[in-house]
Image (tube, rainbow, N blue to C red; front, top):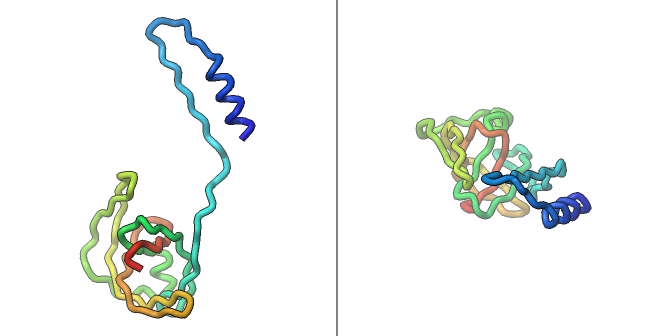
Length: 123
């Protein structure tokens, strides 16, 4: 936080005397946020998911899909869109046996080209 304080102090005292100029300020931190995660059994295989209560789907990466035995996918490949508007490829979906703590259900699971497993709202 010391860096942010220094930048704020500099910015408050900064004056640009050049006509029609623009100040550009960018601060980047090397600290990566820690995601809230949960280990879940998918078709009997332990998979770590990022918990995202705002996600409208639950999905696994193509690598994870292969690790759980490559269940047959239904649907056609299509594009998905993240909250930020970025597009990603959806390879299809399948019905998976999902076990969380003591609860076990068969749920729709989407497979994506992204390198993450997302535990979304439907689960």
